[in-house]
Image (cartoon, rainbow, N blue to C red):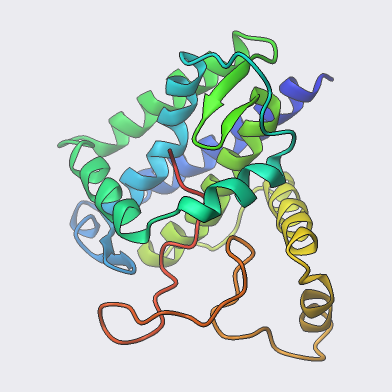
Length: 227
């Protein structure tokens, strides 16, 4: 199995899981609070961008490979991540789901899966620079995994993922932790010896949490940006 076909299969599995979660949202659930300032609708809209950006980026070929690995993508975009912009894009994407959000998410899934299975391993121009599709797709699978858990929690559905998606997400999180120099802290926490610092996330350099709108630490949008 080629690197692209392997990452594409994981991406498809994660996307199918999101569709199943969206199908489980009751009609009365879309305006309920979900994550930070987002409603369920905004969270689904943001998550859907992990599908739509794949199609967009495949239409934007890159001339050279500037981002050598998936981990390097995160290290690059972390410097430019703006939680406020992510929040607004999520709200706009939620509104764009329209009156039939499940139908919209299914269509996004179908277009994304069809797009990645129709190509080999092209260089695409991402927010971090040119990179191979096989290196970019794991960032979308990670996004679908993390926000799948967010969505399940917000809508009262089981907080579970397909085992292979969980495995891939954990592996990527571990690699990020090591690259950021936090491997020992994570190992101590995983073995019950010490708690992680408040506000810890593998998606940003370790820092003191900032106050959110309610005065508490705002960690609601610590996720890979969808663009």
